[in-house]
Image (tube, rainbow, N blue to C red; front, side, top):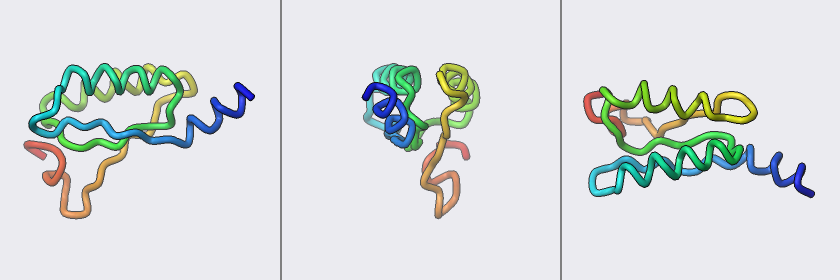
Length: 85
């Protein structure tokens, strides 16, 4: 059963909410825990362009099954989610 749970966890992509008003330290800490636990990726909401590449690279290095997928909802352009994008 544990193996099935691990496989199913890889299909889940929780939110990484970096929008204004959020506790950013808590968001990054939660994201690190989710990636280490084997979740398949994260969907990014918010953040600032200067910090994202380095922080996301660090997250991608934590994936136990390889780098997690990093996704964003950008139908109106990257600036919809990322400040300075």
